[in-house]
Amino acid sequence: MKYTQLGRTGLKVSRLVLGTMNFGPQTDEATSHAIMDTALDAGVNFFDTANTYGGGPSTSKGRTEEILGSWFAKGGGRRDKTVLATKVYGNTNDDNSPAWPNHDKLSALNIRRSVDASLKRLGTDRIDLYQFHHIDRNTPVDEIWQAVDVLVQQGKVLYVGSSNFPGWKIAQANEAAARRGSYGLVSEQCLYNLAERSAELEVIPAAQEYGLGVIPWSPLHGGLLGGALRKEREGGGGERTSAGRAAQELARPAVRERVRAYEDLLAEHGLDAGEVALAWLLTRPGVTGPIVGPRTEEQLASALRAVGLTLSEELLASLDEVFPGPGAAPEAFAW
Image (cartoon, rainbow, N blue to C red; front, side, top):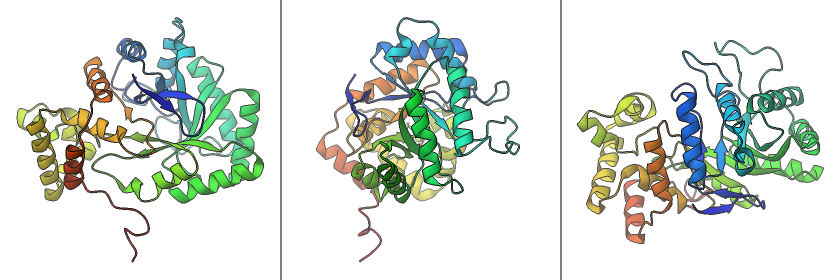
């Protein structure tokens, strides 16, 4: 496994991030534990979850954190070897009914309540990276940092990151933190992959300017970049490619043609589509590591192979031709 610093921090994290969203709703506890053991044995030390993960037909929101907690409880140094990231913002009601006042978003009260609830489910005394899952337009940024400063002083939180923040919000948050003498955001978790590169306009430049590590989510764009057309032909696409983002994208002729060109290009090189999509992200400036959310150990094994995959300059240029980026801002949209 390869490692890098998380943004401007001294924290060393693996270049692959284990996403746990499927633990509970899609993957049972025993299999989830096996996947985490395999990942840790392979050197993956960066695990990502959220307080809302786990909701499903037979599971409740927060169940994913509980599964991580029961895994930590097995001992063997699991907790100390893991850089643990979770999130705050969302409504934790399973029926998605309106949250009780102050039971969602980023008020100081909800941040304090949510941290304690996550720590209890996770069975730990600290969260290594506490991430704001979305921007809160109603809570003053100084209030958010006041709450965070208390948590850092208490030792409940070590670092703070953002998720789904626009570039201007990253700037606003870290300028406010600097005025207070707070350390500020150290990471941004954003939608970023070969097929969706709009983060290159302003989010990633802002992250680099303020020293945030970029953690891409949905690196395969909901399965679109994981050999979707091949699986469709073979009748083994599964739920990911037959519904959701991949299905919606493949219904667009222009996207379907790009995916076809992508798969044909990689077939010529004898490469796996999903592994190349992950390896491509590892070549991008500012990227710490993509989040992979395996439902099985086989899927994890494929993701691990991507870390050791080297893409030639020729292939990278060809990938840019198939999935061109938006260009730099403001030149991409102004004279």
